Length: 100
Image (cartoon, rainbow, N blue to C red):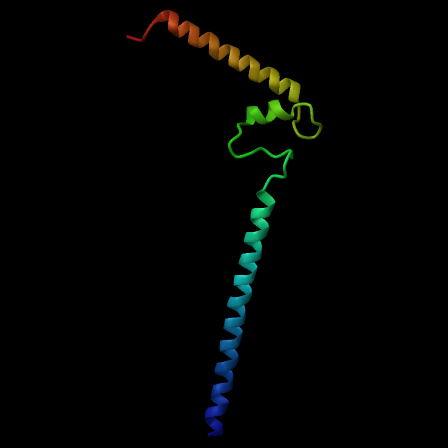
């Protein structure tokens, strides 16, 4: 009887170690998931770009805030120039008519 008991002890210890490791891994995964979702949530009125907002909209909204946009006025100027060029291109394409 005592021989069977000596064989049962290492098996029980091994099972406890494995189950404990699984429990710790699940707890860590749950904690990382909670921290990960909280870290990506933008505070109200914060400097983070919302998921539905384009980079241009973000720059235009925050161009005067220091530390948010590297060179806000220059970026705004570039966005305006690109928009003007796109409008000129659309006008030229309309004047030329549909491609053959």
